[in-house]
Amino acid sequence: MPSGNAIAGDTVLAYNLFMRKVIVVGGGIAGLTAGVYAQRSGFDTLVLESNLVPGGNCTGWRRKGYFFEGGMHWLTGSSPDQMLHKVWHEVGALSGASQIINVDPFMVCVWEGAQICLYRDPAKLEEHLCAVSPEDRPLIKNLCRDIRRFIPLKMPIMDIPNLKVREKSRPALGALLNMLPALSRLIPLGKLPVKEYAARFKHPGIRLLLSGVVPPEYDTVSLMFTLADFASGDGGYIEGGSTKLSAGMAGRFAELGGVIRYGERVDRVLVKDGKAAGVIVKGEHIPADAVIVAADTLAAVDNLFDDPLRENWTRNMRRNTIPLVSTFVCMGVAADLSAWPENVLFPLKKPYEYGGVRFTDAGFYNYAAYPGYAPQGCTALTTILLGDTYDYWQAAKTQGLYKQRKEELFETIRECFEEQLPLIKGKIAVWDVATPLTYERFCGSYHGSWMTMTPPGSMRGSYPCKLKSVKNLYFAGHRMMPPGGMPVAVSSGRTAAQHLCRDFGAVF
Ligand SMILES: Cc1cc2nc3c(=O)[nH]c(=O)nc-3n(C[C@H](O)[C@H](O)[C@H](O)COP(=O)(O)OP(=O)(O)OC[C@H]3O[C@@H](n4cnc5c(N)ncnc54)[C@H](O)[C@@H]3O)c2cc1C
Image (cartoon, rainbow, N blue to C red; front, side, top):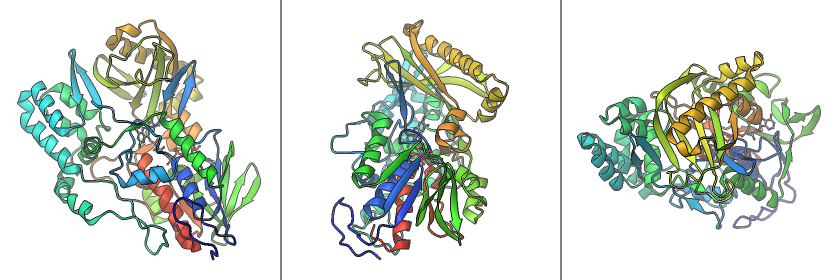
């Protein structure tokens, strides 16, 4: 049992006799979070990360002077009004010096030469969309009313029961009461796919804009939740992007005395006498009193144990998860696109199909406004092609056509972009394609997926972060609550550390 004193603030608890050893498998957002909180609570924590850098999917990379943001586009919890904001600070993702950029309009649809803008402020959005499409006025008014209703719906950050805490975390009663107006809309909008909701609008540009915010197969609650998040001043981009955010978390963990070993892929989690007993890395047994698995849960329950884990929740996760899979294409262009909006959608004159997925529109993130993301006068562009093309890329690999298929896809995207942006013609200095196989290799994730689809009727609750059949074994990661993403990764890392603390009698 702990013998030391609990010290207020962010200092490590001084449990001299305590120092139980915890191994965290994976140094993505969930693993780093679990690591920070475990270390802060007095455990001797080792994070084993198979890559040479922290962050997992929350990453970006440099090529020939360009920086390609490969992860975060908006961060839930960037606003101080969100309970999650404090968590992002505690884990080192945000600091007092973080510059938060709230892009507005958040997205722009270019339709027949005109720009239809997704402004954050519902009043401005209503006025703008009504001017674009007066015949959609009643629907636009309802849309903006729903956005306003959803604004108070914020992700609550709670403590698990019977946990010793230094500081309780729970939403204020007033905040809970403010959420009531949105509740009546959860059932009807939860049954409606975004693409059907968007199809009600007469203006094809508004339809495209609304289908571009979250995947169009998602339920409309996800759309409203996202639009309300922007409207509340949240969903910002953090200056320095994913790599800086991940590095901040790894730095925080190290400051607290935690150790990260990079390039260390865990082959097996050892279970002895019904308890987690450590891990095997490159044939070496690293013993531990507890293990937190923060690699993609869907892949980990099958691959990291001698006997695949089969408890009700792991079975349900396997059955219910529809993985969100994408291909990421980026290019550096020797042209200044600062006159263009940051997040652009447009219909294609020539739709294309690849890997069994048909694309009738395209979009790009334009990083012209970000110093250091490209050489002077140049621009980094990225696009995310949603759709499960995992089998297509697997087949390409098997047939020795992987590189060729990447080149073909890049050519298609280049043509689409050049049609919309003639000024980039002949000016592409560098390009890259990250397929689902790239993400699978880089993050060990199931089919390279980095979130979970939430179509109407899908499971929306959270999975437990631990098992009944194995003690001292915990799980964290974006799969813990669909649709996942960084907010779920961070909150599940915190919850896993809370279970650890409760089981070992430590103060969180
Ligand atoms: C293009 C793109 C855009 C995105 N945009 C957003 C956005 O705007 N907002 C948002 O909230 N989310 C976004 N996401 C999703 C978000 O980045 C992820 O959901 C989140 O980072 C997942 O974190 P995680 O820690 O749960 O998992 P992961 O990122 O998968 O981390 C798991 C870590 O475990 C490591 N690992 C796996 N197996 C092993 C092993 N056996 N041994 C050792 N290490 C192992 C991996 O290398 C990885 O570092 C985006 C993702 C992508 C790819």
